[in-house]
Image (cartoon, rainbow, N blue to C red):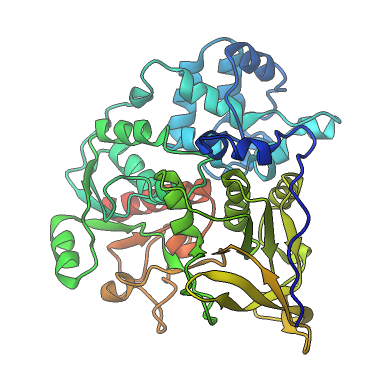
Length: 467
């Protein structure tokens, strides 16, 4: 079995900074947190807003609005920026999406609103909707006070939200605006879920999440943090305190690869790796990093490894590029930053003494489709080779958050997934509603917001029909 060291160094892509040089400055924090979508100046924002064709209308929404999972009236807020009224723009955004500032930074706008922009059909670049949205939500003097309107009537009913991630926060915001008493529970000390703990810092470090959470507090939402609802007794206490419950618990730990050597020092799971960076406990990764998996999280940890100073970063994936779950634009940008990809390859075991030294890999080929419709990856006998690495990061997905779900009784016979009405978010246990990653297995922040809003509307209809 031959050993194949990585020999190709990093290169700067067209128009990109030389991240290899940046990462080796005395404090790499600047490289790690240099944003992918930097803010617009007021002049830049107004000039960009003037490019908008303000298409769509009352009966036919603009394509960008139809492509926004949270339903923001994009032409309306862009027009407000063009006339110099960012406060009105921010109100329009936050009324539809309580995490509007966060989504402006982390949304895959190139495949959502911007991907539907009619300017593309005119041979022009799409309107920079994401950065215009960020400009609006950043520009107001009191962002925590945006669009806080007292509900027309108090409902005299209470709803518990378990999980302070994007789905839970969106659900809580809608219910509070309708006059419900809302209490949010979460085991973390800070609200935000994956946004707070698992979004790569070059997309969003922390801001503006604290301001968005403060706005929800001002709406009357109560937060009970550092409290895990994971026992039957805790569930019963929550049930006794409210009329309906939203489960927004997200996903659990990273999936384990289950191969020899996974416990070696130098083998990371993706979420602890990102959380360590966000808490400034920067991992010692050495010169060569291998990332296992090819989803969007894999792209994030690969590109953050570049920023941490790795000289060689390689992504190993058992299928082809066409089958990779990451957005094509994410893969292209990673390649521009010097990340290498080894397709149709799977790790067999991690090798080393106390610390990782190399990965034994095996070449794969595509066979018949599996249940997902993608062609199965099958090992090629005798194709094993050894790859010298200092660090490996597993980014192959997350496991269902299973501590709570079986105790409530809202899962199928196998314990997962939750059975739910997609139009209301209601489970087979009438008082329980759900949405977000716990339901779809892991999606975008804005998709979680959409599902939280659907469930809030479902809860409102459910409680409005009760005596």
